[in-house]
Amino acid sequence: MGAKLGQHFLKDPAALDAIVSACGASAGDAVLEIGPGRGALTKPLLDAGARVTAVELDAALADALRARFPGAALTVLDEDFLDFDLARLGAGPWRVAGNLPYAVATPILQKLLLWDRWTMAALMFQKEVALRAVASPGGADYGLLALSVRNRAEADVAFELTPESFVPRPKVDSAVVILRRRPAPLLPAEDERQFWRLAKAAFGQRRKMAAGVLADALARPRGEVEAALAAAGVARDARPERVPFEAWAALARSLRA
Image (cartoon, rainbow, N blue to C red; front, side, top):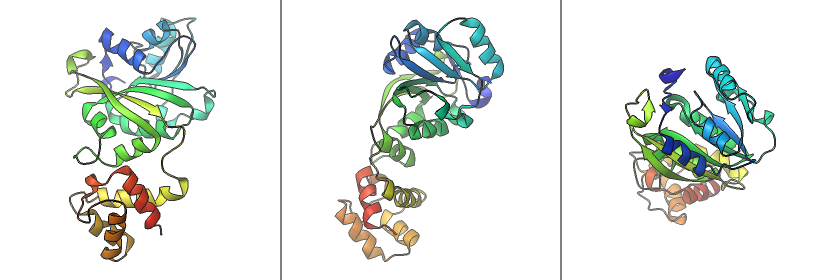
């Protein structure tokens, strides 16, 4: 697989140990490793005493992992994580770790967020994606990814890495994000459809004021939308990146179709 999917193998021992620590893996823990590659992270996870289930798309790499760690507390599944049925895994609770292929890191994260059997994750992303995942309102990084992460997890950037830490060397910096799954999503199920309808419409035209975009998307008077924004504590002329998660949730309730 290698770099054709944006995969760059981490070789920095200190960073590998830091990922194990960040996901909280210790003796007896069930750990899901996404994209183990050549096993650089698999080894310190096993050394920590974790029971590792590794999902690896490349069949040759999966076979090499089985040969490298015979008899270890390791299960290797040579499957595409995006197609993998997470219901096949035990009840857990699971911890998650992975140096994610850049090309599919965001859909992997979105799939993980919808799974309810994990407690903590430490995942490597391209730095740009990591910053978008943890972004707060007010900046260019803030958008749909940050909203989706916030709904189901608390997230922080743990540390950053330069290209020298990888083989082959990527052209961008990388960062590890720690995620702690919430016991339940912040967004009530009955508001979810409208929440994403509003957020997607607004961030699709993020340079425009949210009130005008939302009024057009909902076919409602602009004054009604401006009043809903004001009730949610948002300026009437705010652009989408200035609207915090809680305000989007309030708008979804007040502007429910």
